[in-house]
Amino acid sequence: MDRGIDTFAIRSLWGKNIAELDHAKLRVLNDLVHQYDISISSILSPLFKCYVDPILGDKNRATHSYEHFIGFSPDLEDHEDLLKRLIVVSKRLTVSRIRVFGFLRSGRVQMKHVEKKIGERLREAARQAQESGITLLLENEHTCFVDTIEAATRFVESQLEAAKNVKLAVDPCNHVLSRSSADVFDWVKEARNVMLDIHVKDVTKNGKYVVMGNGVVGWSRILNFLNSSNYDHYVTLEPHLNRRRLNDSIKQMKKWLR
Image: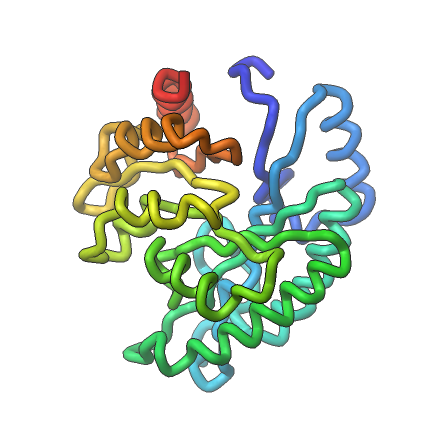
């Protein structure tokens, strides 16, 4: 590719989320992958960006309003069907990793009140995925119960230890956006052995997305640590920026990963 990138994590194409592509579009995508000799590292699905219990749901919100997941239901039952579709999509694209989330927060409900239910749902999803040789990557997301790298690491180690096909897609920027007091760098180090991907974007202290290195995440220190610790899994640029600033982020990341 013209930017020297040959591996991509796929979230959406042709105005649709990857889970919505029909068989014809998946064939076209497969043809493009072979034509340009590129690889797909993972499916960036919206799976479990929903409520873990119907009583927690927002009765006034029928679908997501978040830009990348517009149209997706926040109801668990629909996501259980979505899992089956994502497994089919992954097999057709010969991809073995699907990104998942740790369920949407609701009001003042605390993690301790829903931890057991979240664990049950994720273990069942892992069981279904394992039957097809697929690994689930749990991403920390500031709008979810599993919001920080600390929460994701502790959850995998306590609730999902027996599910060998559940690992982490660590997102330091989401950790910062969660307003956690836990040091982001310390928890990247702590998550090192259960992390198969790390998502790269940067943000100001006011929550505005910026070119990586221009925000408060501390990417230079994190990437230097990954290099020095012989981390050999994926580093995925996910900048939430326009094309010009995306190019600036690519240049910065290449500089730090040399």
